[in-house]
Image (tube, rainbow, N blue to C red; front, side, top):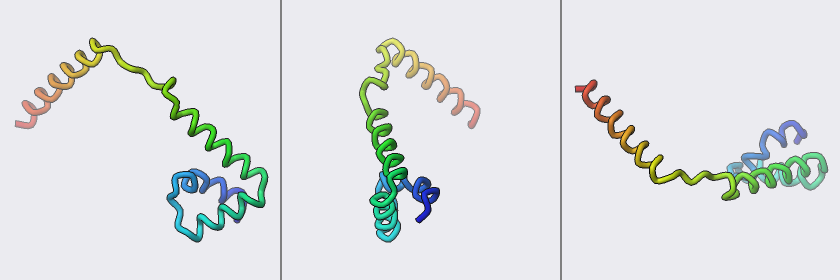
Length: 83
């Protein structure tokens, strides 16, 4: 497997979306290629960092209330247009 192809498949490998043959092939490549192994580890680190709670914003109750009201109004308008 080429490094280019391995790097194309890293995300699918991490997500366990590859078939057994591809999974074994990329695993062997990662065992043999330090550069691709670093790319793989970097993706794992990035993914882990993006799952942290510090990146999520908890909206205020006022904002949630306004959004719900806006969505209800939009839905009423959409239904009125359709019928």
